[in-house]
Length: 323
Image 1: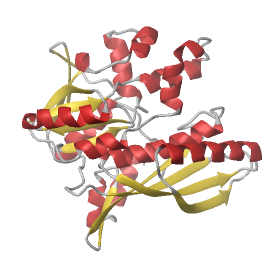
Image 2 (image 1 turned 90 degrees about the vertical axis):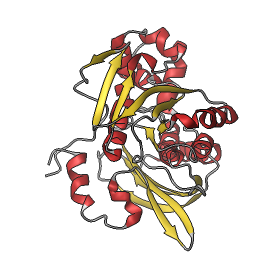
Image 3 (image 1 turned 60 degrees about the horizontal axis):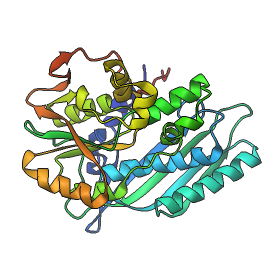
């Protein structure tokens, strides 16, 4: 067994409840006494999802943020979170984590409802988990499925900042302070819950960009049974990214495969253009049409009208020897 996809395939046969959505989505939707709840769970592991020397408060923020990003993609209102925490005996790290957790809970207006702790063996990396519970939007919960031929593909905000920040940290660049925005994008992502709720009535499919724009677009294509065309030259880049990495085909490919953006990626019928623009204006967010859906299946990539071969790596994928 080579990794995440193979294991999820095994789980798919067990996840027969309608709330699981066939494990084709990044959250479950549970119908309960006439009310819909959105449930999601994410884990982060030291040395895999965050660097061992990342500040503990930032690790806590990121753990909450990635779960809020899943809720945002479902248009959900956060109701609470449950924490799974691994104790290692590093009391100062744990105090800083608690401080950062409090900041994140306040920042996203979500309460801590409970959780569990476990003691880790000496030298083992920390593994942290969070379950988030949200209230579903009245009109229904968007999923990765639903994109149709003719739909436009949009992204919110800019792409690639977190990946650039992580690259700088890993390479030990000396100009981190002058590129603080990129480092903050990696350490303290800011998913937009209000935008997710505003867009939910108008989209045909929606997901968050966690593992990379291309791989998450490919997941929408697969779940929807359609082709998603992405125009690389239309992908929005921040001024900070361009100043640090340039604006070339190579830098853009890096941006769309890096991951950790926690932006929204969605499809919508062109007739919804005015509604989409209105939702973005109310939330003060820039949306960019970066592609379209067509008949067929899979992902295709273009740059200035020229079709490109897909990169060998579309984004981050969890791998490991699970056999």
